[in-house]
Image: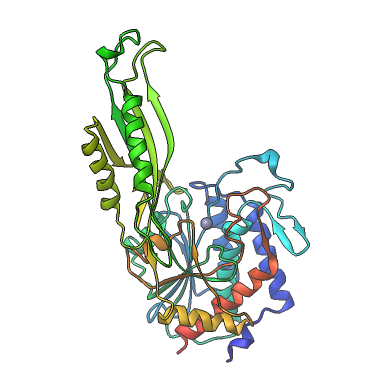
Length: 397
Ligand SMILES: [Zn+2]
């Protein structure tokens, strides 16, 4: 069949919209995605997917097509951030209110709309009877917001899924996102020596030590590597705390959080070494480390994660990018390229697993984590059609 046959009927558009509304009305904060997972699982089963299951980490995976052969994964996350400022919302964050072609609610943009579109891409292939030579894997993961890449790592390393291509369905305004910067969150601790503040010469003030380092960090931030596509590396001090035994004591410790964005050519080790070099040069009594923390899935599995990810970018002429551009054209759109400013599961699939990865999704990428988040509903239908067209192109030969 021709890709133009993948356009959604009025009935199918209504079904996607109903599913998306149900998703927005179901809360799924990070680590608490159980209800959303159940909803996704039931919808995939209802739509006749060839196999649907939940793994030990609580990810939901649906397969359309045979289990073996070339495999495409459409990847979404089920979790949302919390409602940061409920008073600032002009609509109910869980109301799934529709106004002038827009659907409002927490996760409407990031990224329940992308998720709904990937599920319905699978449904379209089933309904149109497209014969596939390999599986379309619609993967819906948890914990993206606090620990991007963690649950997708489970799909690959614990579940044994090994797709040949990945599409990240995070919001891109239906542009083709072909990369993102990496990031490292570091804790920089400056040690001082406590003394009574009436005799500061007897101690060593950790805040003064921190001030000298901050001055150097600001200079370093202006000298980081640059990439014509992803832009420059970035370094910012995002938090500072000090400790003194009383108001009349010289502080013996000062801690800073550093947010470092990595561009192409930069690594986590380089980012840490740069800071260590400053510490050495200043003769400061300080140490720096990458922040690690534990996250727990909605099924109770605990993972220790490093707050670090690598940058990635796929060439504009890469076959996957070209196939995506073709799929976009079948929906009557002109393909345009972009990059993401936020982190996605692509940090794992592209940079760690080295699987060709591209991003494409409904919703404005400026809207995640903002109040009155919304998605243009028409974009959700288009995305479903584009994902289905891409699947047909890659999997049906
Ligand atoms: Zn997201």
